[in-house]
Amino acid sequence: NDALKIYSLAVRYDFSETTNLTLGRKINAKISSLGAIDGVQYEQGIGKKFLVGAIAGSRPDMLDYSINTDLMQAGVYIGQVSGKNERFQQSTLGIIEQRNKSAVDRRFVYFQHSDDLLKNLNVFTSCEFDLYEKINNETKNKVNLTNLFASLRYRFSKKLNASISYDSRK
Image (cartoon, rainbow, N blue to C red; front, side, top):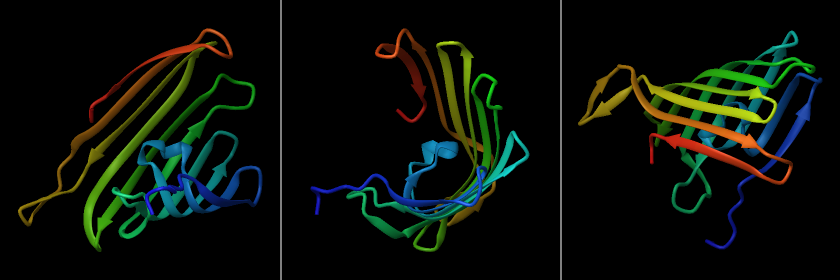
């Protein structure tokens, strides 16, 4: 059981150039630090530069990466993407609720931004702000920064790049 781990196995249907539905296990590039999502993901473009999306499903088991229906999650997000002939920019803002055996485990706001600052220089940032906390059966609704990740990458050529990153979890 430990030999095979499936990191991505999904089917995607494109209703149009800007609308799609994904079923299965997949990491969503718009909310990538959540990791793999087992379930359904829907994304709808609005005009040329904006989008809305929703996820519903579960998180993989932390020990063996199998499907774990005790770890349900759902959320919605909005995003902005650059136009076809512009330098790459993408930003996402969402709210996600994660459960553990039907009890709320986390409720948080998610933000992600990626940007080509210069021709070969890319910056990526993501952060999570918890909105819900339950310690010793006492529930509190307060804002708390729980994750901050930032990365800067420079591409010298197609085969060589260098990056530096910061992760508040490590």
